[in-house]
Length: 386
Image (tube, rainbow, N blue to C red):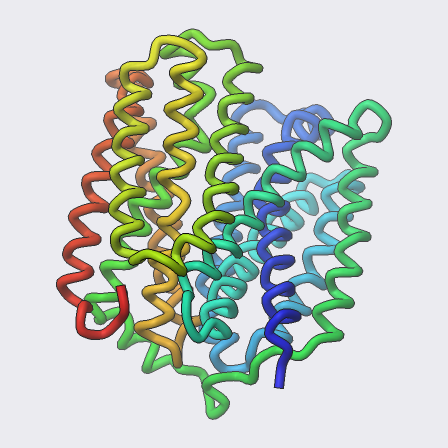
């Protein structure tokens, strides 16, 4: 038997680590570029390694946790992330640096999928609420790492800060070793055949398609906000970063609050409210001409984006409780593909029409998600609770 509070805490810590790993490279990239004398092309190639690692980790974790359980994967992943942090901090080899970045991406992808699947498994009810609370810890990690680097950079080199984070992760590893996790769900072998059958399930594919646009939309906000604000509205670089920070804060705080709201109202109605807010956020951004108006638009977007992943992953957990790891892996990989394609699409559009097209794409993706949500409800209304 396992202790629910301990396992949920382990999941939140794992998600916090994912937030740290996902944002670390972007936070230290200027320093790394200086250390290795990287130009823009090599820096771009370096940043592309991280999402590749995340995608590989997202592909692998599902069948492993369904077959062997969560504990061994949590332990092995943390064991590899620790030396990867130390490697990024101290290596003088560009090849080793690339390997370390891939490892933290791979480990982050595993922790992202495994923590979501684990919380879904241990939540007998209110899966969306618990997943929303879990998702807030990604925000804590994503906000915490830049804050830590910014606060300590005057007194310490980034290598010392990264090394210290790696050392702290030893305590996380000790906690994972000490507690008990739920038993494997498929103890007789890898659920390969069942996993292939999931690829044919229309409900799961619609969840994946929804998250395709959800992940793409969030990536647009994460990656193109500063460019849009500086070129489109003529806001300074520092103020643009401040607005982006408030967007992440709005998303994180909303996920904390959703953990309570989802226990009181329908998840479907909440998703509709969220999608309407996403559309309004794009509309406000399209008409924004000042710093304050842009700040309001991004806070609305942060609130509107918060429910997407927790609620839809909660639906996946309800539909496939015996293969939650594999199901989560499939939809998360589809989401990562959406992240890549939507970002590339906007790059093409911005080249032809300028960055001012960003609010339009935010609104278009919101409409797409509304249509997919109604199709999903029509398809699985008899199977899960909305």
